[in-house]
Figure 1 (cartoon, rainbow, N blue to C red):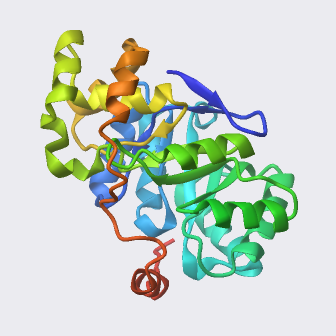
Figure 2 (figure 1 turned 45 degrees about the vertical axis):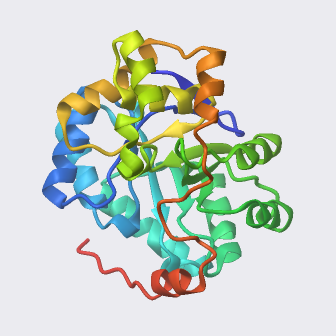
Length: 285
């Protein structure tokens, strides 16, 4: 497994397992299976409503907690200083752990600065190893950097794939010392991405899959990828994407596939913001 060093010196795996929209039973089995097949990064969120199942999967795997890089995220309705501290305790309890490796503010809405203050305190207490954000645009990142108390987010997790390559965003984040992490690395399979002739040709020449080509394209750019799959064979295929390297020519060819096309609503769409902000979470702790 290749690693990347975050801006505070912490090492993070470049590939992990995402668990968005999976049932409790699926999640527990996925996490256990992934860890037993050499995955060491697990990405969940309060908003996924499956933190408890992730904790069970980790325990069932028998892999020591210290060998696992565990990420979760703070939901919008839990933002604000006091709410964030309470949400953190709930997340630890659900995940059955006493610390997080990375905690992200899931969306750039609500009392972000109150949350960031609380997260900085948790970082100082070594209850979190690194803190970051998700779905933040460059202006929102700069606002947090300049006015958030001095700690630069270690990670910004955003939609990134061959059709939305975020070259400008990556340049900005690299300049500011922020690591990009890609959710939806396969663009949810839109436009027959797995049947793209250019990618298929690259895959055939190396006797690998299109999925592996896409993941390698991301990780070679220093972008962390967290593909979701419930299939063991695909988990193994994904983790083996480090067994080869793409050439500079390959990377340039793939760069031409960019369309600046998102497969999800804009995080600046007022109706989308309203919809997300009205989602109240309930938990069985």
